[in-house]
Image 1 (cartoon, rainbow, N blue to C red):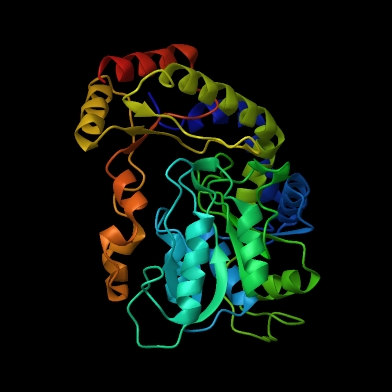
Image 2 (cartoon, rainbow, N blue to C red):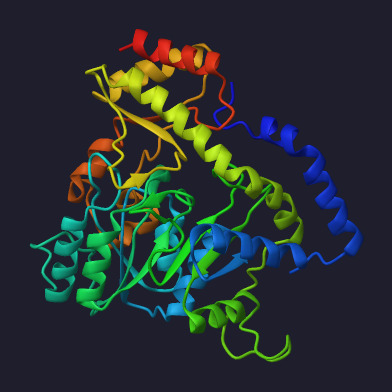
Length: 386
């Protein structure tokens, strides 16, 4: 059984994907070919942003966003410790400082109440208000990076209100949430710039690395376009700023176009699978099922359960493994405990919710082509090993 089944999807789209690849091979525009512009237009329309800019990866999307907004060394960027490393890695690459904000125990996303405390702590330079990284440098609050974890939108209404109150930029990290909704607004359209990933395992992925930035700001899109190609100006030998080589391959856009066409249908299939999981596990007092607020629709990048404790989780995952059913733990080591961020001198207990969840969370197979018989088997094994 596959944790994420890309082969079945390819079988369904094989003829169109192969045809699109052949078209690119024939026209030979491997960099910024016509398929790139088509993909950008389709996905901007899909999420409701004015502009989309494809790039080489979700990581590059974040770097481009930070550069476009003018992040400087010692600028503070508030984000969650319970996410993939790239969210904070890209902050540190530019010399800025990630200030972590703990998560809500039910949604796994940034807790707005704790964000308010963290902003106050930085403004007053007072770690007694909320845990801060160890530094002797003057920190400048600059931006917030909410993460749409596991396919669920962050709680944007209070987050955007805090950003406005404190004059902070907002960069939406929707690498796991593109296609989800919050108050009927589609992820990819929140904040100054939104960033997503097309890593193959994402709900909408390519066959390699790829990413995209979204914005509705006329000035920011021009800066992003320049930054994507070495800070290019009027031509490739005129450079107006320091940028990166962050272009998406035309072949990847060609592969994605048929996937975009069936994306809404796949979202519906994911909803049905998640509903079946939740209906069956809601009655199990030993498990906590994902909470989806009434104003949200998840894209279900992952279906994650909370076990009572780490030993119970290990027992369930072992039982699944014996039947060749994969399960995964996201995230075993929150970002404040990563060796790469040891200079920040955070402690595990600084973020108690993240610290607790890391020992109890586990994710089950989730994709649009999960068979009814497969899901039934997964549910039966989990229930029999509680």
